[in-house]
Length: 582
Image (cartoon, rainbow, N blue to C red; front, side, top):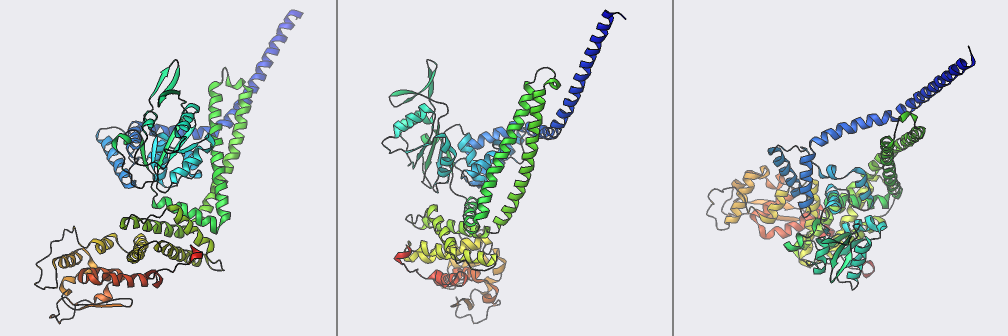
């Protein structure tokens, strides 16, 4: 073999060796790449399957979601559910594919965003989460009906890092602040709105921007100012039931942030646990932040992997940097996933420990809504949620901490909170309304516990008005009025516990509630004993219903004794006022 042939063979050998080395390197990288993307493949396949199902319903879901964002704002929860149901049915009738179990939160938000809002102070109930979506996703600037200032606190926390500017319409610097926010792209919160708005706000609310010489401008007053698209405007009112004219309603997105029972319950639960088990609440807050951070990191890693794969040119197995980056991302992802599983398991155990205190929070929420009903009796009776929270927290702070079981401690807190709310609120009531308030507290607790039915409470308030029962002919007894006969007939036919009352109503019926004793005898000439011992058959509340029917003038006295035996004698006494406790 001559030198030339040897050189050719050597070059072929080197080329083949290079090919072998390249193939070996590619094989190794392929193994690493396959290993790195194995778990991602499973997750991506699940995501593709879910996305395929969601894609089928996208048209209908987006139509319904658009309607929700446009019209939901002012409505309470039950009206929102009715609208959702009707719209889903309408889509079905028009053969527009939509999810049978449509949920605005699922369609328009993700768990990370919702967790972040909750950490910023947004209540955790579904209505508040929907309100968060309306505030952040609506096409018009939000005007929140916020008597308890929940939206106000959430917006301040959410936009704090973005340089939120807070002002009121009557501030002398209002226009200057508005102009600076629009020009510099700062978020702006206008608090304490009444039922009218400044005319100068109209172009801002309607987003009447225009282009001039390549600049986006808006007319504010007499001048045109540059409009930064990062500008955001929030409006809030403390009015519980404002009446806005149609021309205002079409300029803004009204969002009803009035507190809900479940939302307030969660807030009070956080207060109870913070005061009773501060270690749990601190750990829970840290876990929420950690979970949010880890989930955000996972999303960033996923986006990074997809971005690297998409941007790769040539043979992906020759890109050593890409393979290394993917492996690093994979390792980081595994560490975070393991930590996330451990953190979420810890969160479950913490939630279980917190739930033990929920009965105290529930009692507080129920009592607050009973207090709020006082405004229907007299408009002067306005008690803010902030004041109620102060009373609630003060009771827990001052409650005697002795060695006792958890259940005994919870019962102590529930009783102390009920008594403190009664004493603090009743000091501001007219004397004639104090018993009404005690009865309202009793009814709020008993209705929530299911010990009294709503229909029974309504009967005490309104009698048989609106009943569909057609009474038989009334006996010609002067003491028996038409209303009494209608009430008796209604109870006899609609409530099994009162069946047979029509036959006994003329006879002597003794009734006892605590120390209150009453003999009801509509027809003194009827000496026959009643066929049923109503005093033994009926419970205390049902006896009130009986007195409502046959001896309504004694109802107030009976209610006083009813409150005394169910809540305690202190709830029918006027609380003493000591200056050092005010």
